Amino acid sequence: MEAFPEMTGTHYAAEKKTILSLCNNRKGYCIADLARHLDTSIPKVTRIVSEMMADGYLVELGKIESSGGRRASLFGLNPDVGYFVGVHVGHEGLTVAVTDFPGNVLHTVENISFSLENTEKSVHELAVLVHSCLESLQMDLTKIAAYGVDLTGRVNHQTGYSYSYFISEQKPIRALLEYEFGRPVVVENDTRAMAWGEYVCGVAGDEGTILFLNVGWGLGMGMVLDGKLFYGKSGFSGEVGHFPLLNNNQYCRCGKIGCLETGASGLALHRLVTEKLAEGRTSVLSPAFKKGEEITLDSILSAIDKEDVLVIECIEEVGATLGHSLAGLINIFNPDLVIIGGRLSRTERYLLPPLRSAVNKYSLNIVNNDTHIKVSQLGRTAGAIGSSLLAKSLLLGNID
Ligand SMILES: [Zn+2]
Image (cartoon, rainbow, N blue to C red; front, side, top):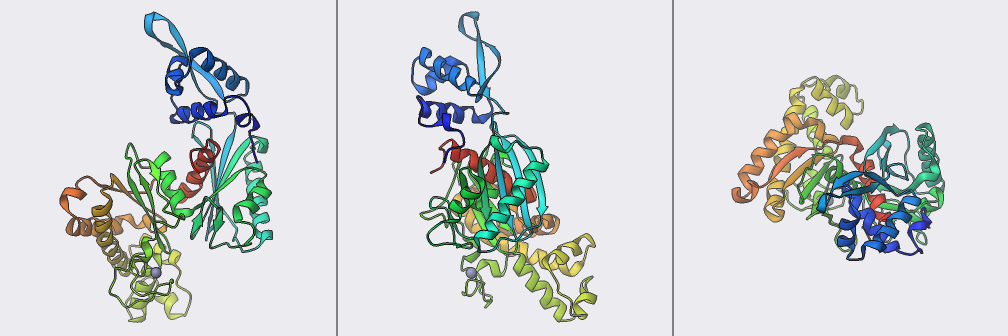
């Protein structure tokens, strides 16, 4: 399935993809630079660039002074040639992001009400919602080059299977999505897509090694090591939530006891708050709790806006537990940057001080001196933006 057929099966397809990848960093290149990078002749590169301009991929950005006082043309990506769409499928609905070829984020749309179920009909409904969202943004659907879809749980991006949405043993969810969208699709784990979004477009600057902690209902980790997403053999790396670290005798969702997630996640925060409410502690949530109403993670997070002391105490406990484990991760990876993302990142005012303190206490100073800890900049749009950027990587052949 090729959205942009002129990119494959034609002369110079490999060279064209290399030029697109080179121009990905938003800089322009002159013919002599491209010839050097491709290790080929200037007449050949001139021919390839002309074809790519005729196809609409490249545009002339301007002129630069070159050797001998001559002015050389600078070529770069044409932002209007095509677009990439990222779709984050979360418990709270869909988030859609649109990026262009140079990697600019053009649109993000949050809170599209939807719950993915294990049926082909549900995948069809997802595609209908995304298309109608794109139409409301007045996007030309024929110019969408590829889609990226990120999902919770274990995802193997190479085979296209999601193990949370195991709709058909014969067909991976990616095949169903490609049928619905009529374009190449990359599927990815949500935390890994968020890590990539932050790495390319968010809070990461020039840092090459980052750990992204997705502190949502559960706890996951996305790793960018030396500028590349780390997958592991089957794409299941980053299961830090099930790191058997805690001696708390708490059952985990996975069936084991003492996983990190049972002490450092939204689920843990929910347990701590409801336990203390049951003990009779006072909170803005007490009246609802006494009436037997459901205490949701959202209602707990909203209690911070009212400076609820009970909730703040519980967030501090979660921050200390997370920081303790993060100290070990920092010792192992020696990262430039740790990004705290996910739903609990909005509690940063209370979460981060005990987290930093535990990192200082338990990690080796010589290692943690290298590491910055920051909160996600893209917030709830990180996954969708990351997915759209991964869709571009797919088209350019930068991922397997
Ligand atoms: Zn577990």
